[in-house]
Image (cartoon, rainbow, N blue to C red; front, side):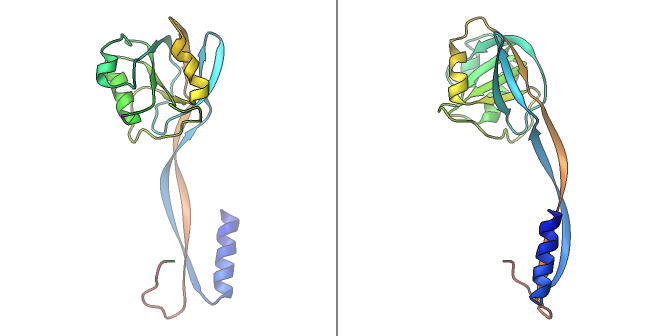
Length: 176
C-alpha cells in the first residue's frame, strides 16, 4: 500500500496535480483457520464474518430444513452444535435461532457443492462455521456424532490512506 500510494502521488505530481493524503480506519474481520472435527475427520470451513471465536466440543444435531425457529423446535440442540442448511432465511437469523434454542455452535452447509462465504451482519454469542455443500452434506447422515468446532477469528482495526489529487486553482474538484 505504501508503494502504491507513493507511486500515485508521484504520477499525479508529474502530471501537474496537487496531492494530499487522508487516513481512515475500518474494522476488519479475519478467519484465522476454522474447521469442524467429526468422528476424527477434520472438515475445513470458513467462519462467517461476525462470528464469535470458540472451540465447543459437543454432540452434533441435525436441524431439519434451514434453521427456522420452528425447525429448532423439533430437535433438542441445548448444549449441542447445530447443523443447518443454507437457504430461505439470513445467516444471522439461523444463528440467533440456534442461540435461542441453546446451541453452543452452528454449522451452516451450502445448498450447492461450492464454498460458502458470507456475513452475519451482526455478532452472535456462539461460533458460526460455513461449509461447502461438497464437504458438509455427508454430515447430515451423521447420527449421534460428537464434534469439535474450531472457529478461529479476530476483529481488528485497519488504517488506510486515500490519495486526493486536483489541478491547481480548482475550487470544486470532481471525484473520479
